[in-house]
Length: 332
Ligand code: QUE
Image (cartoon, rainbow, N blue to C red; front, side):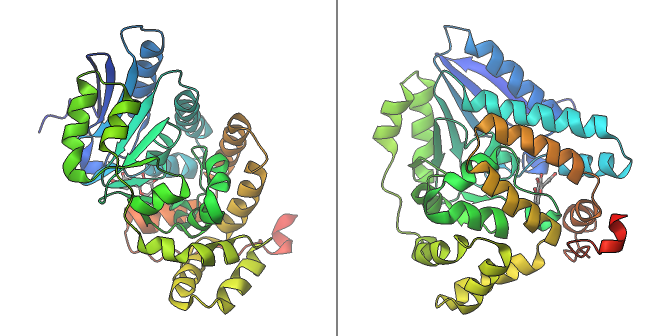
């Protein structure tokens, strides 16, 4: 095995800066090296007149990008190494902001899984293309973390409280539903992606190329629950959210959402609820600063250590969460 292969490759092709995520064994989960390589390329291309637009894609048919370097952050949190936690999250969130403020078209091709950090390097771009194989999620409440990478800015702005549903439950939605809530901007059948890429790599303007290849997203099963999502996920607090789910008429859907809340970290749910509410009235810069402050604190929380253990280390999927709020005697 060639262990020296870079996890991200960047090149310029007929005026298009191409970023290829190429760490398939980890489903392209980001690490600090990948974040740095992407940041360096984007900074160089920003002022290079030969680069007119940016395209980000994956070499893996299974995943666009499964998340961030959550395992290394757990290790650092466990040993009390705040410098490592700060170095990674500050670089990742700065990359999210660089993409959001990028002065040239930035097109992400999402074919397969895009979760957590994977949404951070796509959703902030000007065009997010999904296929019928795309699966999007912000699953952090299930590992004792919280929706970061600027999610506290974009989730509360999605249509019909869908962002609150995604951020709190961590449940997945398919590409078509991602378009209808605003997480994605274009739907292109996977069979057409190679042709779209060829046109973009030949130097076509992204807006025209996308107009040519995008089709109406097919009706998604998830869209049938939009009314229920809006009924329940506009609740003013977690207790009222649970009460609304418990009596909702869309029973199978509500039971799945309740089960997801039940298996999430209670600390993560409380943090996420407050974070999304604060994010609804904040700029992206303010949201990322708040998330960075929070990430540094949550990295040292027992629920984060336990959640990553259960999901990624032992893979028993049976985290033992701490009660939240903590009992009063631990406050003194
Ligand atoms: C929540 C997350 C992540 C996750 C699972 C969650 C995350 C992440 C990974 C991941 C997946 C596959 C890998 C890997 C990491 O899983 O951020 O190295 O090979 O990166 O429930 O936030």
